[in-house]
Picture (cartoon, rainbow, N blue to C red):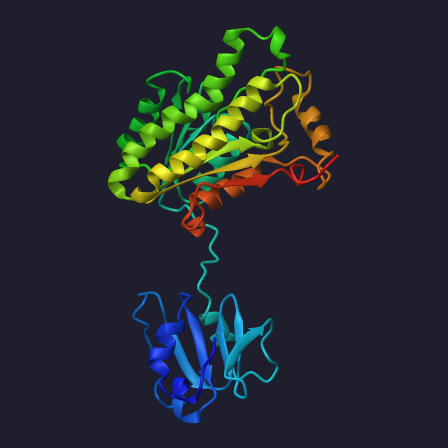
Length: 346
């Protein structure tokens, strides 16, 4: 950006023109400008704050720009000059991000497939960080999670009425619904020519259709509030195929496309829809297929560039981020959390 002395003297329009970050500090090189005021609000945002003092550095929380008088330009600086007159307390005051880990505090969330694995980790993380939670699972063991601020629903997520029941529980107990996490899934290991229709449809129903049913009902509850977030647990299998899991890859591929389409439909209502493309996560997901599903997943995860499988809590952290206002500009994305397995060529 080009600036001249006249721009610098007309400091208030200048600040308005270049105020693109929520909170920042401007220190200008002309002494007379430093006398104009210690604090002004930029009208472009009620969160903007400007501190004006003598010096040469324009600073905000993410970038540093240095003003060059000979050329009248700003250029990036990646560190504060040692002779900067800014004190550590002043620098800290300019930070525009909230460092609190309680990003879902006060929110109401519904999590499917909540009795174990990623779903359980997400329920525990949300509740620990101050959210009210509805935990839904076909396994009655989910009822053991019930406590203050956490209610449970035993239901088959793929069946008509289950979504209405779960969303209804959120509205009845907590008065609203802010977050939906479509985590429930099912897998079967069989070649296509050996798979029957019932096996195919059970995987599709639990993994993809359930997400449709719950998203539809959740959206109805979120639209009046003009806000909300839906996070779908997809997979690197949304894009990569392996023999004997055609139903699973098809369902996860459908979930990725459903995420993108629904994101476009709900954006105008202030509802963000995203997905996570998870890799191998050490859970009980494959216990019906292998004698030790957790050991299989842990071993298979070693093939990822990161050299290991994920723990459910690691994925839950990403769920919490995408569900929070910190991810306010992320929409219709499939965030890959697979240890790099989807970017390698073998």
